[in-house]
Image (tube, rainbow, N blue to C red; front, side, top):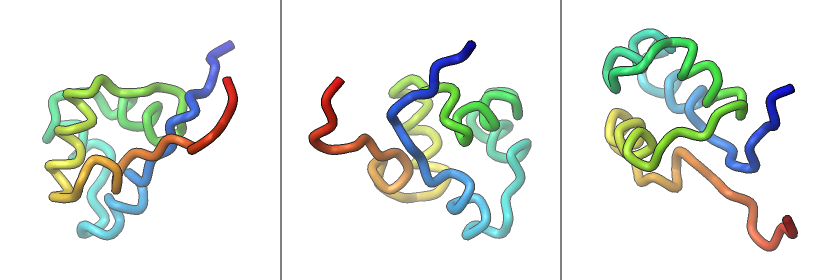
Length: 75
C-alpha cells in the first residue's frame, strides 16, 4: 500500500489554466513520464525539489503556488 504525502498541489488547476495542458505535455517539458505527473497530482508521490522547481517554472509561478504543506499539523 502506498502512503499518501501531506504535500498537496495545484498542478491540475494550473494545467487547465494554461491552455488545458495535458499531463503528457507537462511530463515532456520536465523530462519525466506521464505516470509520474499522475502520481504527483494524486498525492501519491512527492517530487524532488529540483523537479518541483521545474514544474513551477513551466507555469511561471512561485513554488508555493504549486505545492502546499499544511501548517501546524502534528506528525
